[in-house]
Length: 226
Image 1: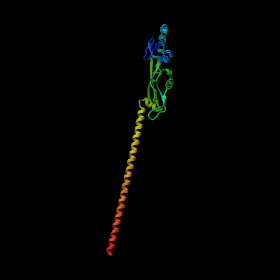
Image 2 (image 1 turned 180 degrees about the horizontal axis):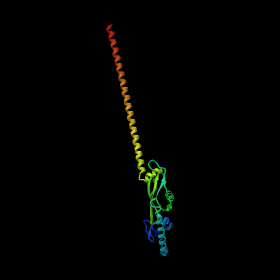
Image 3 (image 1 turned 90 degrees about the horizontal axis):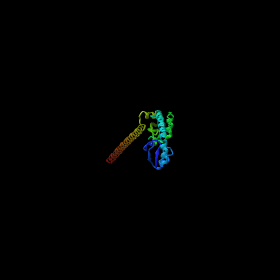
Image 4 (image 1 turned 135 degrees about the horizontal axis):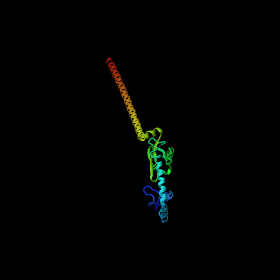
């Protein structure tokens, strides 16, 4: 479908540009959100008649967005979430979570302004774009942690996920060493027990042999006397 843009749309164009987009994109997003008009003759005339006002209104909104950007740019929000030992969240971070976190810091943003390029499903720091106006975009940071202490570590540049992995690997290594020590101790104990058993067996055999020899000597003496 051919459309006339009423504002700048990323990767499409600016005000007044006539572009071709997929029908679904136009019907489901651009047209209902008043970002464009169908590019027919009647709408072309309407647009040209109102072009100066459309551009003036856009400039006014752009200036207001630029003025407000200083209160949003660079903000960091902390979201405390439950997560597994591998850092996977039990759930995910929503756009509403981000909006609520920013507005708690007087940022005054709406859900439609948040650009969440992919779901946030792990602990860590994430840069998120906030589109205050089609021509004014700022970046905020979302700090997702299991506790305020972990959030502070991440803020200071500590990779909590890596730290968790290293701690887990250290625990596994310690358990392996402990198991090896226990196995070696068990093997040593078994060897000592076997050596003791063998020594006892040899003693018993020697005693039996001595007894047999003594008994044989007595028998020989008895025969000589007869």
